Image (cartoon, rainbow, N blue to C red; front, side, top):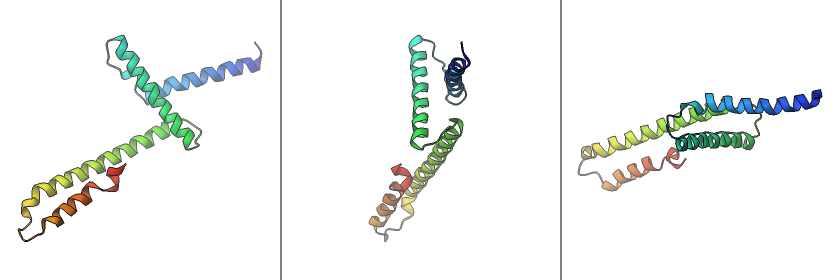
Length: 126
């Protein structure tokens, strides 16, 4: 084998090694608790799909480089969105439970208007 052939082979092999490292460390390939072949195949397929989605996002954003920073950014964004959504839901529940505090003089339309605002916050549209 000549050096260019060796380098070509090594670069292809290196891409495979990086893929498996990312799948194991970032996407939890080794965390499957299934005990059947079907469960293992399904889990591996899900991990591969998650990897392909990350690669697609990288390509769409025209970013070249490792997946780990993108994965961590997306995970952080997801946690922020989940926290904000949970907070909005709790606030809505507090308002619903405290509706008896509204005096009978208060127009019920104002109460429903407030609930409508809470339900249509920008975070819920994502």
